Image 1 (cartoon, one colour):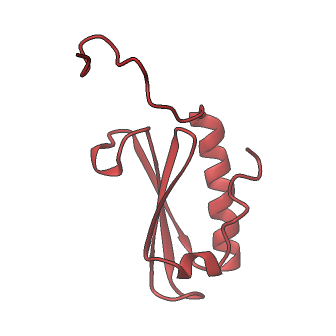
Image 2 (cartoon, helix red, strand yellow):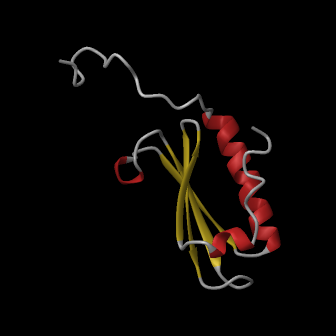
Length: 101
């Protein structure tokens, strides 16, 4: 998992203004503002639910620079280590009382 965020580069954040992702059950989301070199990237990490329903959310903002992206990757690695992850799976059969037949 140490290399889970190596794909994050300055150019990566030009792909979309908002980018959600996950490493197994560890969920994250980015939103960039401004332009490369003088903009910002806000990052959130949250529990294994959709962002809109998340209750346990942590956020941090980084400059959209080489140093900022490096600090963002370090922060994500720390949060991944703290929160942990497991392979994503859909529970089957459904737990009793949670949508089972």
